[in-house]
Image (tube, rainbow, N blue to C red; front, side, top):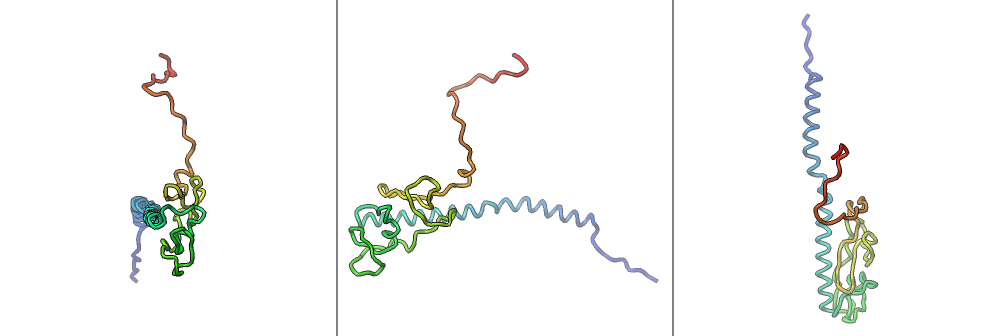
Length: 165
């Protein structure tokens, strides 16, 4: 009687394959870990550019930037030269809308606009200067610790050695 030997992988071969896959994963995964943050930063850059260009068009047509209190209406509805707004397509309102909606900030997933501190809304808007920018806390800002005050300026003597002079 003849016995057939079963052909299979040995434990050593399986371990080698697992180790090689682990090494490849440690090389490849970090390359993609920052991809989502890069995409969010790109979206913010595009959104900021679109809103800023539309703010400049609004300024040319109305003689100034929209007020913060009416920012969303003045950017998303039709308007007159005096800044009054109505639904898009309303007769007698020749300007706008400048954008269909205020875009969401990809970090906060909201479209709020204010002139408050960083992190108080999705977007920062200054009605005097027309400045418009993202207003979220970055991951670095959220985890940052207060900085240590700077010491004296100029070269400093080396610290004293604990082993004597």
